[in-house]
Structures are given as C-alpha cells and as structure tokens.
Amino acid sequence: MSRSRFTVRVRLTLLYTVLFALCGTALIAITYGLLAANLPLAAAPSDKVPGRTTALGEDNVPPPEFVNACNRILNGVPTSDENLRTKCKRAFDEGVLVGAETQRQATLDALLWQCGLGLAAATLLAAVAGWFAAGRVLRPVHRLTTAARSASEHNLAARVALGGPRDELRELADTFDSMLERLQRAFAGQRQFIANASHELRTPLTVMRTSVDVVLAKPAPTEAELVGMARDVRAAVDHAEVLIEALLTLARSSAGLAVREPADLATVVEDVLDGADLRDRHAHVALEPAPTAGDPVLLERLAANLVDNAVRYNEPGGDVWLTTSTVRGHVRLEIANRGPVVAPDSVAALFQPFHRLGARTGEHGSGLGLAIVAAIAQVHQGTVDAQPNTGGGLRITVLLPAIDPEPVGPGRR
Image (cartoon, rainbow, N blue to C red; front, side, top):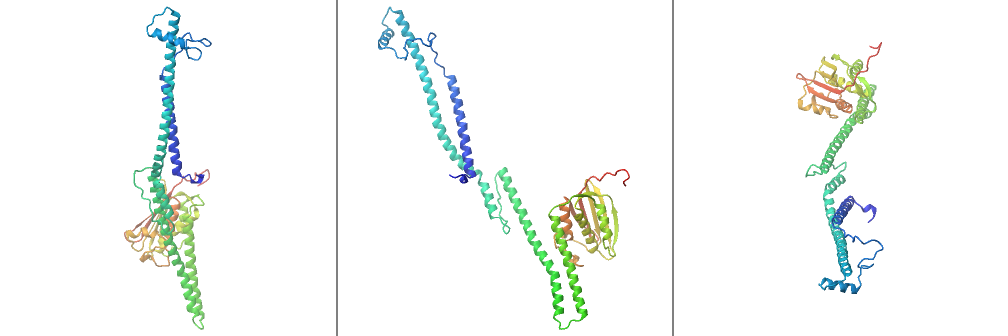
C-alpha cells in the first residue's frame, strides 16, 4: 500500500493495533517475570563447587553399575558400604534438583509460547475491531465531508444535523452547520444587495437616457429644451455620484478598520453640524465629551448620515435633538427628530440596504444611510438601536466602546 493510501481510518486502526500489541507484550513480560520470581530455583548441593566431580559425574549421567547399586539400596538390600550409600543419596538429591529445574524452565517456556500465540490472535482481533471502531468514529467526519462537497455559493442548504452525545465531533458538526447558515444568510444578503444596487444605479442612467432621447427625437430642439435636458442629466449624475459614494462607504465599513485613532465623538458631531445644511430645522445640541477610538473618516460619516437622516425625514420647521455622553464604559450618541410615524415592527428593516418606508421615499434618498451607520458601528464593536417617537420620527442611539481620555498636561485646557 502506497503512502498516499494510508487514510485516517487505516492510521487509526494501525494505532489501535500497535498500542494493543505493546500493552499485551508488556503484560506478558510482567507475568513472565512474576512467575519466574515465584517459582523456586533448584539449589546445588553445598559441597558442589566448580571443578569438583559430583555423584552424577561431569555430565550428570551416572555409570550403569552405580545405578544398579543404588537401585538395590533403594529396594532394601542391605549394604555395608557407607560411602556407596552416601553417594546414592547425593545422586538422588541431585536428580531431584535437576528435575525441578527442568520442570521450572519447561513451565516458563510453555507460558511464553502460549501467551505469544494468544497475543498474536488477540492482536489480529484487535485490528479487525479497530477497523470497525475507527469507521464508526469517523462516520460524522464523512458526513461533514459530504456536506462540505455539496455546499456551494448556490446551494448552502445542506446540513450535517449530527445527533448523539455532545462530544467534540458533535460540537464540530454544530459549528459547521452554524457556519453554513451564516454563509447562506450572507450570500442571500449579497445577492439581494447586488440586485438592489443594480436597480438603484439603473435609475439615474434611465433618467439620463430618457432625457437625451426625448430631446434628440425632436428635429430642432430649442435652447430651453437643451438646458432642461442638461439639468436633468446633471441631477441624475449627482444622484449616481451620491449613490456610488454611499456604496463605497458601505463596502469600506464592512471590510474592517484600517485605521484606529483616538477621537472625541462630541467633536466629530460638532464638526458635522458646522458643515451640515439644516434647512429650516431647529437643532438642540447637548454634547458632552465622548472619547472613543476608530477611523475618523468613518465616524464622521456615521454622524453625517444620522444628521442627514434626521433633517431629510423631518417635518417642515421640525426639531432635531443631538446628545453625546459616556455611560458605563461606552460613548453614546443619540439623535432624535420629528417626522412621519414609523411602525415599531418596521424599524429594524430601516437598517437594511436600499430599504425605504412608504412615507420616507421623498427627497431622493438612497436607502443606504442607516445601513452605513449600522455597518460603521459594527466594525467599531458598537451597536445601533432605533425607537419610534410617539408623535412621529425616530430616536436613534449609537453605543461605541469608550477609551480613557488623554490626560491634560500643564498649560493644556
């Protein structure tokens, strides 16, 4: 089998088998050692020293006449040769010791041989059991692989939906399902955003084409008609420019922070108000220090979109309230206005790109203002909340993480 053919299941099976064989070998070695330590060793006669001949001779094989004489003594035949009697007794003792040693070694050899055969058979069974166990353990991984292969940009509906105990594989499968669900929502939102953006960008182009076609269809357009066409085209170009700028800002805010600098949200709002066209609206401002950190350009766009939204969707001569403060580790920007009544169940949809309510479609809004605010707040680890006012209009609250203000040194105010 080539190296590339060693799958995870094969490697797990080999691992199970090798571990089982090692543990079995260790168990046999321990058993052999304990048995060898507990079986008594045959002790040599006290007078047997190296180089001295025993009663059995050098090769532990007694002469035949010596054996016959010892047999007669054992059978009760009297003898007056005490030396022969002593030699026969010594030969008997040595024979018992040699037999005991032979039996001990035979027992150990039989144990080693039989345990070796048993270990080989058990290892083979362990390899087969390990193969099936590894397949069962890897079954959720195969389901994950199947779901991952079937997933694509156009088909993210496949789910693993793994049951069983909540172990590591169950957690992995649930995480994979959650990732697929997030991707499905993201791709659906992306497709919807592209469709809406395409529709919004076609609108000014259609206006320009219609204006040009109407004038060119006349045999001799007057100067007033040409000037009117130019004004229509200019207005459509301005609308397309605003829309493209809003799309680029939304894309930039969704891509993450490239710059993070200390900034005072109160100062940002004050600068936005200085350059904003409030028309006939009345601004009520209460700006307290609100130190945070982030991209100054995006923070300015956040404040500008909120101010523009509050002015655009307001009643003639209406009021706009702006406050900044620091509350429990967060800086808070709150802006409220008077305007059309908004149903509570329609507020969340206002933060979706290109979403407009029926009463909020006037004055050429692009439908991206609050979507950009939500994206900028999210990329700054903040939140946005909107609540409808009782008499009409909205109250929007932005919370961003606060930072410690820069200490004021001598001579600084």
